[in-house]
Image (cartoon, rainbow, N blue to C red; front, side, top):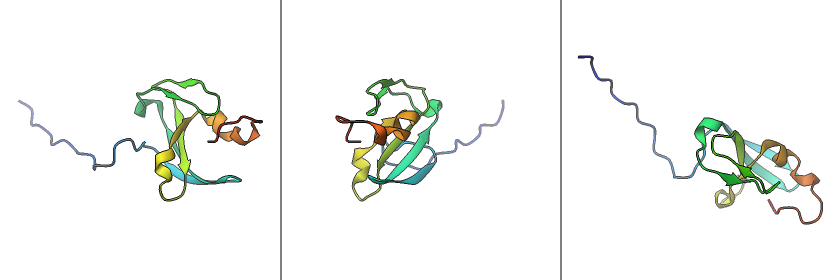
Length: 96
């Protein structure tokens, strides 16, 4: 018989908080926290607010939310290109 290894437990964290490297980006519409997600960490499907297309589970994408107290409730999942070009959109653009 082989010895059993103790499982390494991950620290508990609030549900729904995505993993990845977080950074703060400064934009004309304010400061935003942005976190890149690899395909392996996402299993759900999301809808990108920039292009209104589906982001399939397993597809790399990013999550962004306003960098102010309470802004965590406004997290949105974006295609990286849609996030970079979001301020170039014309009338009727997403509020995010």
